Image (tube, rainbow, N blue to C red):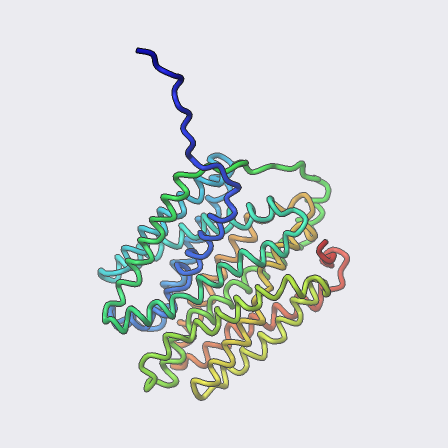
Length: 399
């Protein structure tokens, strides 16, 4: 009896990872934003104040910051695919743990899923920019728009689960989908799967780092991420406080904010064909400021909807534009600078929402606390107005 040559195994499936990374960002958007619409439910379950609730955001984004510090090392040593797998495992476990249990278990769950998101996000942005070198601004707008689709989903999904009188099913269902995506990553092989390092111009790097540009840009990311998270994560509770008679509609408020964020990121690549990146950022921040003013003056649900739409649409392009400008700001030192910059963004996402809760508790008014992200938008506008024409910051139109 003769035997032929052994058959070659045809999996894992070889891929650039584009589709899988976009799916990962879709689910990451859900995981990193469902705390907002869940917050009134968690506050009622655990009997906590706004100040304590704000610490959940602090925990989520501090752990995400540590995840970001780990991300670059994981990509360098293990490759992109395994880095995404680690992030997915953590997001799956954290989401499942949050479904039930006491306050301390919930805090641990938020920390775990936050770290998973922190590991995933910089790897996804960096991979997208690397495989789209000629149109990085547009590609980053698209993948962050996908994140926006995920971010607006929790309001709808949680509303369905609440109508079924089982809000925990939303969390278990999300964990299940994360598990399925984890299996897809496990059966795939990225080609290439390594982070390409480039020669760094040491004199250029020293010039930028010593000039204070790194500090200014890090503050931009700190303020931007913090302002976006503060608006998006507290608006449901804000609507619930202003109009408690609306028993169900308040859960939909984050969907208006993140839906507008998605629309803005979808339209941004079109605007970037005709207007320089800093000009788009200035126009967006004008709308964000208007939306923030409407929110702090809102006296009913309709005005909260309008303010959320304007704030979300206005902030939409700031993050992807700022990421695409890193090479303009720092040249060959961009990758080294990005570790601190992304970490500062996550720190802002921790501090500003926590500060909103703290101000709300001490002032007795969540309306007053919304001046925190409004001030953040003001500072962002100041940065882009002062640096929009600078030779160091001026972005060329995308090719």
